[in-house]
Image 1 (spheres, helix red, strand yellow):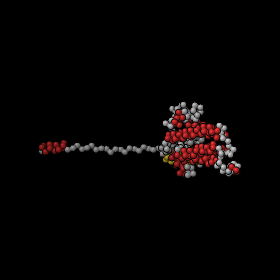
Image 2 (tube, helix red, strand yellow):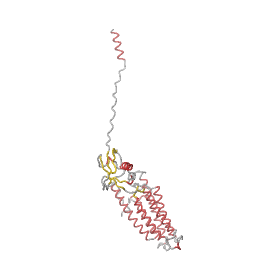
Image 3 (cartoon, rainbow, N blue to C red):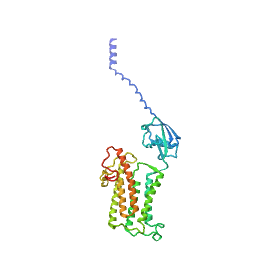
Image 4 (tube, rainbow, N blue to C red):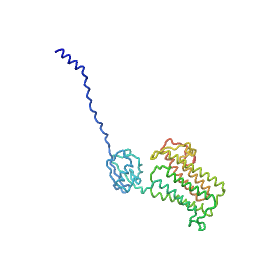
Length: 340
């Protein structure tokens, strides 16, 4: 009996130890999402337009505009302006709901921006009009000048050169609009197209009338003046195109991230060392060249008005650069090196 007991005890010792039982892992508790409840009121009448329930905190203002559009099809997202105060600034499309200074129950105020057009459409309308209008005067269609001049050809060679330069400028702008420019703002109000187009179209007609007039006289200093002006015009046109390419390469498609433009290997971009908006600098230079070439008062007036407007735009962009980038180059001026 003792031998059998010892043998049984030895067999138990030789047997493998039982593996410890593993406790099943407790499933992780899902994070509780705090949804928002949004009320959208009309900014003027305070009429309740929509109540959105269970809006995710990561939703952007553009997402909210899309939800609003589903209930109000007449107001597509580009036509909407949403703000936190009836008279406050519009919120950006990329603003995220949970980062705004609101609670989980928030009120937004809606403003109708009116019918919108894409910037590309506006630019094309601004450029196609002057191109066509100028050619109507160049070919001297009926009812523009005296009947005996209908469909006659101007005698002065500078008139032909001016037509080529004017057409080249606007064809270049059309091609840039189609293939180069990347617009950070998608649309603009429809009413603005009438203001913008009337400006460009009126000046194109005014300039073309006098440059192509049968009694037009060539510039005072003749061929030398015209050739010098042509060199200025072509130099600035090439510079303007180079800057547009540089700005295009600075921004990725669909991105709204702003970056500081810097000079590249292209010599025309070296002006970035001293100017924030050299595209406007070159644009003004082109029209200065065209003014000297034609020696025409309407062209000079258009150049002055254009410079004033572009200087306003340039100063606005320059201030924006200084505000957004603390280490922005201090040597730069807005449009004219060391002056303005």
